[in-house]
Amino acid sequence: MPTAVELIQRKRDGGRLTPQEIEWLIAGYTAGTVPDYQMSALLMAIFLRGMDPDELTAWTGAMLHSGQVLDLSWVPLPKVDKHSTGGVGDKVSIPLAPMVAACGVAVPMMSGRGLGHTGGTLDKLESIPGFRTGFDPDELRRRAP
Image (cartoon, rainbow, N blue to C red):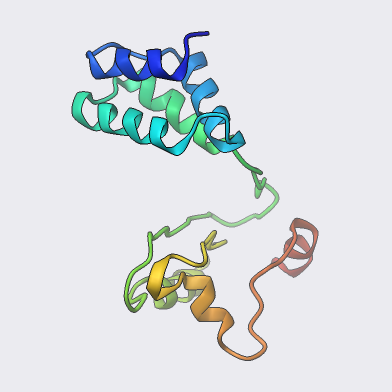
């Protein structure tokens, strides 16, 4: 396997990365063996040179499987997720999820916390006394419709 530096150089020079190399990079980054500065350099090279459809497919798959994957196939409803990088006010996420759920669509709302000075959607919702967001998969299944 080439080193991270060699993969960065190849992408910088317009080359492509194999699915195995992309999986190795993502796994290494999430494990802490590929440092932030190398991943930043790779992302800059990707921004400047782009990715072909095979690279993008491999990147998406590697990111998907870089953490725990929650299987929601048992939910009998259509499922959607509205994702946000945060912002001042959460003008869309907080009202949209209940509106879509009222239309019969499951909205698991995978969400983040601690997103800079504004906080994440979870931080805002958990500021409501008694509002809980941290359900483990078994509890989520018991609470589902």
